[in-house]
Structure formats: structure tokens, C-alpha cells
Length: 163
Image (cartoon, rainbow, N blue to C red; front, side, top):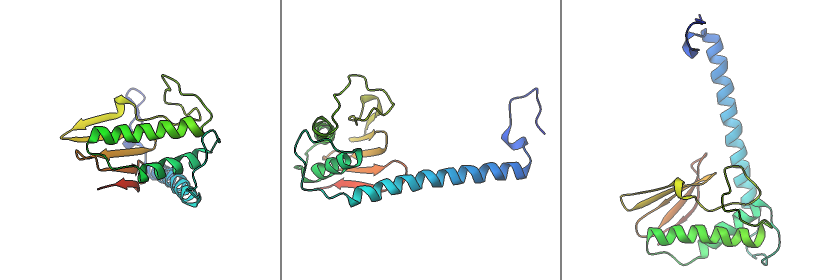
């Protein structure tokens, strides 16, 4: 039973109520995973190349596909800092050409129609590795410049660039 004098305790609820809460949370998690997998399937349906000329406005999923393609064909990097610079600079290049929106100095966390490079406060440097997080991706960069970009929710590899 819930005691009004104490803070709310999940385990004080009766078992059927707890089971219902667990089921709702599980269904919610499945819905999010389904949405992410649908986005990845949509990305796979977009034909890249040919690359579009700069100035042509593209949808977000088309810009993502262009970004990943340009990362894949870029020259390999020799250090983790070079790889991070490449990852960020190609994203800025694609967004400058195809988003139709100018970059903000302090973009914030709310999506404004433009994607931004990984912010410094979401970058961890340890043991020669760089681990960077963006809104939907996690990037692991090795000391030699090899990197892998994962989907943060499904843990699916989106792109790996290994020499």
C-alpha cells in the first residue's frame, strides 16, 4: 500500500499494476525501436550517388545518406583527432550545401532542421580513443583514425571506416 507520508514507491504497488506498467514501457520501447529501424530502411532506399549539386535542398534522410556516403569515400585518417575533424567537417559541408538553413553558434538540443557536428561536451577522450555522442549516433574513433558510427538506440553499425 502507498504511504502518503513517504515518497512514491514503485514496489509498493500491487503486482498487477506493476505488470501493466512494465508492459506499457516495453511496448513504448518497441515503438521507438521500430521508428529507428524504419528510418534506417528509408535511408537504404535513397540512391546515392549521384550526389546533388550544392544549393539543392534535401530532406534530412537524404542529407544523412549523402553524409555517410561522403564519409565512406573520404581518404582514411591517420589519427583520432583527424578522424573527428573529418566527421565534423563533412557534416558541416553537407548541411551548408543541402539544409537551406544557416548554422547557429549555440544550436541547443531542440532540432531546428539542421544537423550539427558533435559538440565538445559530448566527446570523451580516453586511452587513445575518442567516444563522441550526437543526438542519434555514437562514434568510436581509435587512435589510428579508424572509426565506427553506431545508431545509439539499435546499436546497429551505420558506417565503419577501417584501413
